[in-house]
Length: 425
Image 1 (cartoon, rainbow, N blue to C red):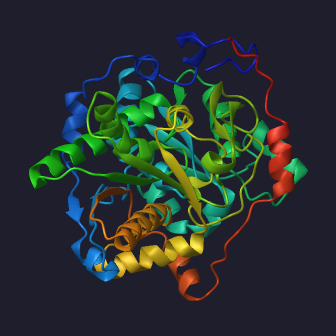
Image 2: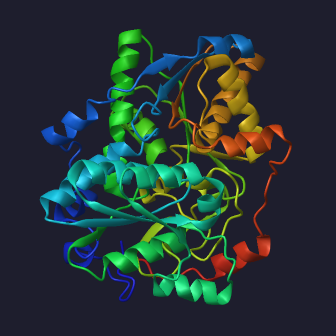
């Protein structure tokens, strides 16, 4: 990471206004394993280990020789994989004497998960929710408030960053970059308040690897091992959670895999973005990280997979993409919802809009096996259920769900505005 003012590498003291030291040290750790504290394990036991299912009915519906497995993270209290990092983040903040956490959220999966974790540890939680999702998904907002958090549509008049955006466009639909700016601005103003991020950063991806570690043990029980791993990607946390443990095994001499990241065509950071240093937020309050980015000022259209509407990709995910260790594909939302409905009718679980991208990717891989007459083992992460996203399905069945395209001119402008960083040879 680089300091936003000096463009020099940041140290622990630079990040201290935003994060407790334990998370900062995890962010920069070179240790392969970090012990999970027993108080965190105790809470995990409410839903972990999450189930690994063989999708036999889906295999039959597709008439594929492939074996399809999915790790189902929708069994958590918040309905997604996000509590895997929300709980340890709240734990470490509580240990550090923090009283309040402030964050952003897109579709609301992360906001509801941090609200859940905050309630566990007696922490006040403030969530800035991207305006378009705030309007689309009122039940996520209600869940946050049920857990005791406050939720504000972003951009808002509560921060200077929000007011600046609203002055330019009063009906701005918001973006995760803007919501991050608002949350960081609030966190930096008070000593008893810290910022929490639900994806992108190293310590977040670290916490999510519990998903892949469990899947490895479960597949060993089943006497199987994947040939292909699929995950949806927005900021990179659930994708890294399922893929990184297997990738680590491969890099240490294990079986070579194909790993496929599936992203939305309306916000395609891996397939369309530049690999460069960029700000994590729109107001340029955060450190710069090297990642695949569409530009920090880029505002994606308001498609329903709100958690995937982020301009950048996790630095570690971007790095392995640059090394050629993973593939990336992008799909529009209607074809992903079509895949999600097919999955729901076969497997009886309704995926979240973001998870539909992973379902689509897995189905495409299974159909390749069918076309080639080959049997492969496919593993994907079903990162959350869609019970709070029914309006999206209502729109889909009503023919109102549209494939939204980003503005090419806006993307070009956002990429032209990338910060100039001279890298060492």
